[in-house]
Picture 1: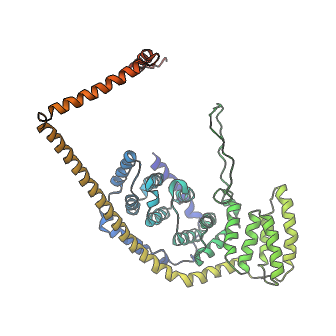
Picture 2 (picture 1 turned 30 degrees about the vertical axis):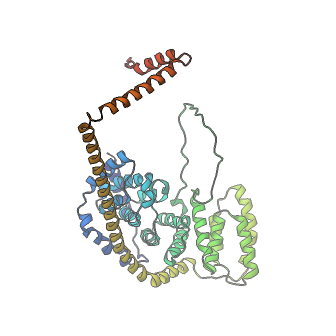
Picture 3 (picture 1 turned 180 degrees about the vertical axis):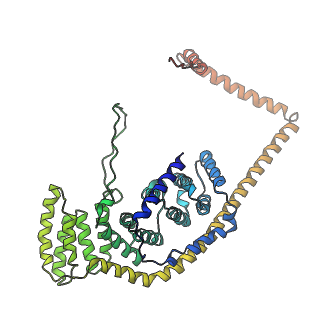
Length: 452
């Protein structure tokens, strides 16, 4: 039933989206996705032997009995699925791995395979759920995944999804790749053209009328880390722009910092930053277009925030008087992406194809190590079984030789039990307690019958 519902929802999204989504040229070429190299993993003799549904059932049984699943088994399962009907199984398996002690051993290829699977079959809602719920799924993209995801969403003009991916880069504090950084800036600026596409998640309301009282040992003090606890899209996009801007020592970086900090409502930081710029830099501090964008971003502020923003506007007017850059901001960012792609794309493709090959060897090596460990455990268990059988046989064959010693041993045990019994009976009200204990153990609760 759940699979049918998911399929119906997906079909509706595809049918509705096919009319509204206008495809445009993506920044990354088709070759960047390395689809052919990725598909070659299925030629592996190991993955060809896998029957996904059978393996999923085995993983579920293992998790139910042992409370954990092997990371390499999960990797093999996630890499082997190609049919879009396994979405629930993939999510359940990732969740089980995350909840087990094997979570720290998750393979890099598992992250990539899961992301590829969701993207290939257009499970966008599930993709965002898994990527944002790191505690329950533990899937963390690398720079190649980030680039592939943002390019996919930008091509479809799904700027809200692209901005969500950009915020993940900020949360992982990863600013080491030029294409990823340029994509993040572009995704955030394009999203802010229509910010209503990404709503703040609603706080669940308790509609039950029944009052339930729960005794707790202590109450936790409320804590907000101002990073992973962020849920407001405005704060996430603002902090992302500020994060990426801090890693650029140019006018575009300063422009991103300015817009990001104001979105993020870090007004004291904005005043400090503008003062510093005015003292150190003479001209071309920011792009002139940003002042209009900031005014648009903050047109619907609440009263309390509006008063604080008024103080920022005074400093912005001083910054506006400077000779700033007049170039179009979107074109500047697009040119930045184009330059980064021209510089880094070929290196990324070559590196990623090599990584796919390395992952196959790593998977085979870990699996071989696991098989050897299982075989070793089986041999040890077999040796222990043989030793136990030999000991029992020895006791049987030497019973009459050791009969007197065994009888003395039995007498010692009986004497010890007798003394313990006497000690208990000497305790106050021991007989009453023993009777109560016997009564409790023999108590059989009555059947509860339906009065209706």
